[in-house]
Image (spheres, rainbow, N blue to C red):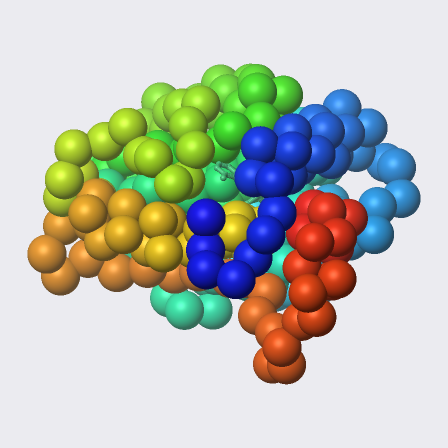
Length: 200
Ligand SMILES: C[S@@+](CC[C@H](N)C(=O)[O-])C[C@H]1O[C@@H](n2cnc3c(N)ncnc32)[C@H](O)[C@@H]1O
């Protein structure tokens, strides 16, 4: 647990799973954050978005556009941290092509199920999805060339553990393209303890 944040990490994880299970199962519901294809288009997502099955994009819940940081090269090995229903993973799968690979990890099983079904629909045999937690990645050192992530690390109190894992699994010279929420001002102790502020 990160220094100074007293929050029940297990309770937070179970609330996050509830929230994102709902994003996967009831995508047309009104959430406190924007979702879906229109949102990804507003963010200026790349042309590969058009090929990503609706099954994935209807549950897109990213916070910004990690593709503004650049495209991927054919053949690269990509980790999508907190891949949700798979929108960014399936864009990445198109960019890296058959000689590359994309591994999405997420801790919410309902999101993983949608991502796998969407990958099958797209015919993206270079993409696979693994149930795992960002703080404990089940991969060998130096397994990836690029890490992408959208709207995930802000949900995790122990950011040091996440970045230590990303550093470990990235190959030398690897890079990260992360879209996320940051705060400019300190959050009160009461705010830090409020699970609802973490999950959204
Ligand atoms: C805001 S959604 C974003 C999903 C996806 N990146 C997208 O842009 O649609 C956050 C995702 O992170 C996952 N998540 C949150 N904390 C996690 C953790 N500690 N380990 C793995 N996945 C996590 C949630 O299950 C959820 O699918």
